[in-house]
Image 1: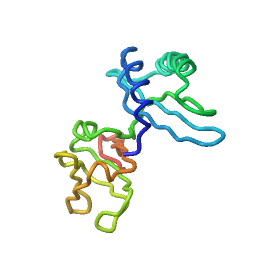
Image 2: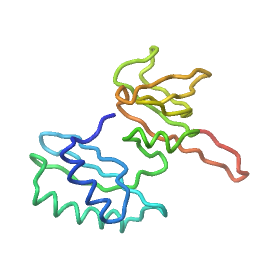
Image 3: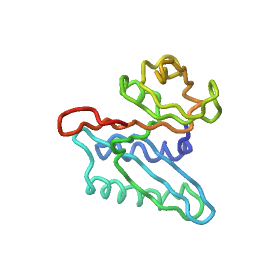
Length: 161
């Protein structure tokens, strides 16, 4: 799974958790002129703009002092949203029975993208039911994974992906 470098996780996660939030994941996209550092936070009763502001303010101070990133970058603090990204194997286990969309670094059974239902997590693999077939996807083979939100219409019926 594409994640931020370890030195950023080691610096950022304790700060986020110390403020009472779950650090869902950290994305870092370096760029010569303007990189992007995005931190996803969550808590039991959801995230408000004020929560993002609080975490952003605290992280900005620490990042300015520690200076772990060369060059310019933009800091974003966000809720994971309904289509939450997955960064850790444990996140798949927490959403067994849910639909996910996964992109792979290299094709597995001629597919680089798979959308299906999480069946189980075993060892370092996630088992996905897609198109009537079970795919065993090693966690390290995944470049990106997101939850596919299930919305219900006014009658309580599932309305698609």
